[in-house]
Length: 269
Image (cartoon, rainbow, N blue to C red; front, side):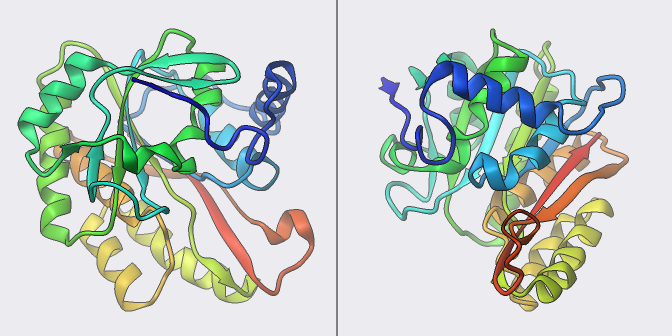
């Protein structure tokens, strides 16, 4: 199955050269140190004009391996609540990004919670917007796409443990990318407070505290499930640190601080 782009021309430019220029602008927005390996990333997924520089700051400092697992939230409500695409490719204006069929099938074996389903992915933007960055930095990458609705912490543990086993048994490096924005549509002041509470849990490598804090303190972090699953897996794989690369809000771009969305770029290693 070939998934066509759903948000080209809205979240990012539809013309290939314009898209490449925008990706390069986002990657070059901040000087990056020597590229390093990572177990997992948290990157935002708004339109590039809003969150592209946060995502770019993360991607610019990572040595992207060939194999990736990308976890995104389900904003549309369509499809299975834990959906995987196990074959085919996704197209962007920069070309086709192939799914790693063998890796996807192995993850399906390890995580019965997952269901092969294309409907959940068809109109979802939060994974798609990551692909042009990866195509620019690692043109030969292959990936496994996961689109996750909301579920309880026990289910996050189930999927997190499966991801850890998948990566642990692989002879090749596999990077997990969790797509998430932070708090939504509150004032700049409230969003900075709420984002910091969630960030404190992430930087402490404490997925249980993150899950609890987001729910108890009404932090509207849309990618809480992808981030939690990634952190569970990363801890099991021996992660020792999480680094906040960049944080911003939509208000920093628009100048309207009355109702903003927070964006954080994080590296887990």
